[in-house]
Image (cartoon, rainbow, N blue to C red; front, side, top):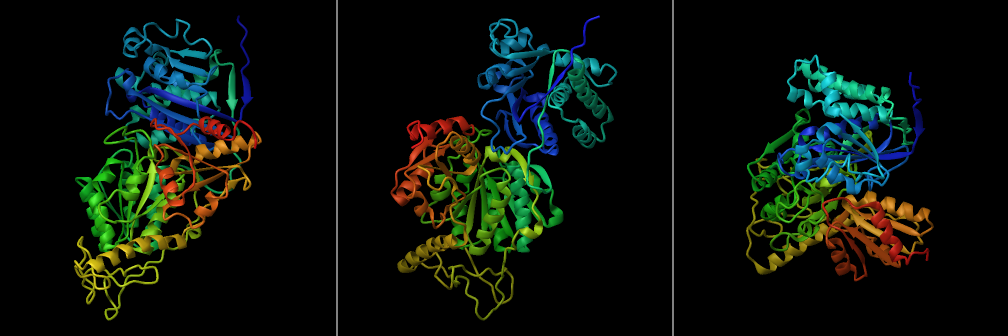
Length: 616
């Protein structure tokens, strides 16, 4: 009788796992379930879903590979990880596409059943990588996941095709065992998701448990890993994606303003989730309208703003271009409107499911005429909640359109979010004009803000539209001097927002020789790069722009107080262009546009390069 090998339990601080398979293999679901369970256990985490734009690329091809990366830790983390430590590959294409990014000596778990002649050819392999030695240097676990799933489901009445779909739960169960996660959370999800399909519930649960038990009883895995909960601030947490946080932020903003929330939107990747999430909050007075195109989406929102609602419209890249003319209408009518642009790879339809931050100049200047709007940007998935409230506050307070920039990485990525007390979120004062005698549609207060009067209110009847307005009366005016005056007023109103936004905050060494600045979704990568550099002895500081128009009042003071300014951007230097023009300061640009988030190591290397490889 062979000796039974004892399994070793090893405690580690962090790991990065990537699930990869065909688009029909359920990798996004598998990654999401693993993330949710990990969040329940109290680990800090960050995720990066990566999936093809095609509705259904040919099965088994490199074009159809879908991936989900998860970085979780017992420490504070800010990114989904530069390179995975573990790759779960459900077919040869998933292995081939993801292998170049895997850490050398990393663990590869493959579904060996999928490595047949047909799939190897589809993945453009000349030989089987499990047999030809090309994976030397990695730890390989070739497991017949499909066969083991079928074996577990031999009594199930499901078809062979339906049984095959359960293999992702086998892989999930195996990973739960390997990283010492309970399966209860996912069992509850299965029973809720398929509550009217008992055979599906039974099959998925059996596959999940079979994968978990396989890890427990097989002698091939000699080590099991445990990652302790992170030391997070006390409170109630949930795992949240950027799009979920954006939707919840707007619901809260409407409640804090005492207004109904209206979303007029045309579905577009990766912004569509916001429309879907908000459609579930009818009990909070939320109205969602799926328009026939981008133009009608924003036009309906402008109408809702005219009628007294907190009005928003959501889109991505090319959709913002289509909203250009109507954005100018919102500027001219001076109505509160939030335009959310979840940036993606461009130009045109570009890389619809990939991330980029190349719409900044479009947000700042992409309109005809002098049409200034406020522009703000979220820094992390959970920060989308705060910035959607902040965008709403600015729009309502200053009666102006505000563009909120997020991106595909923030929108689809997720992290633990400490649910705030509703009492900790300030009210958003909104005052509708009611006094008939003092009413003029374009009169101004000290912030140059015109009054908001509900249409149909007796005595406050007024017209709005795209033609130039006479100051104070709002009548149509072609007077040259009035036009110049109104242009200056609209510009000055945006500038006055700077009085109610926070200063640019410096993180790190105030006496640093280099300040790494950024905006949007690069915050986490920059923060970790700065932290790593400081641990190595370099004096480095970080400042992140969440308000881009107007900028914080101390921006020039901050930028001119550091010897070197490094600006990583996932574009060709759009914020750098703005800062150079505005403040006449040298900016060291670091631009990488690959449809992916920055790697921490790349930014860290750039910091060291700027400092000449030594602590100055």
